Image 1: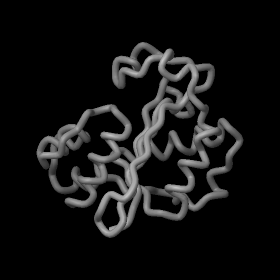
Image 2: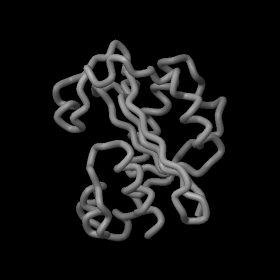
Image 3: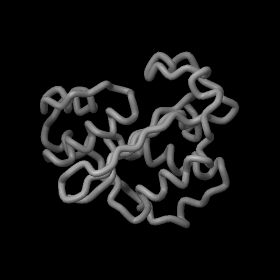
Image 4: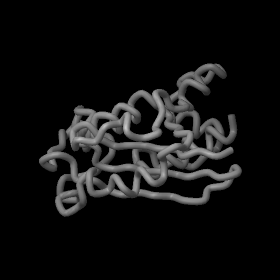
Length: 162
């Protein structure tokens, strides 16, 4: 199995406000690369509700690169590959909207119209609830939920175990 698992955290409810990304590359069923970075969202603006979810604070991203600056690191890991996310519509939406915010055209890259979705896979298996933390707990996968790299790694493990 060859794929990249992805997870975003956002600073606000706007899908272009990526503030963290985790990527885990799997080649022949083995983790070969992990990438994590904080990202300065537009205006470095956060809502208190999103801070409650992931714990990332504005002072942590004030001096970080924006999405446009980290995009080369992201795209070299995902372009032309199978992409897996636990809630693919959310993470794909964050990718598309953040790219658009910075003037990047999603269609210029080989990122796929739909990504693989472990939430849908495990829901179809009868998992209730099928949220990432519940699926990982049931499969014995260690998870620091809402840390983008840990979530991406948990998603990768779930995809490998399907």
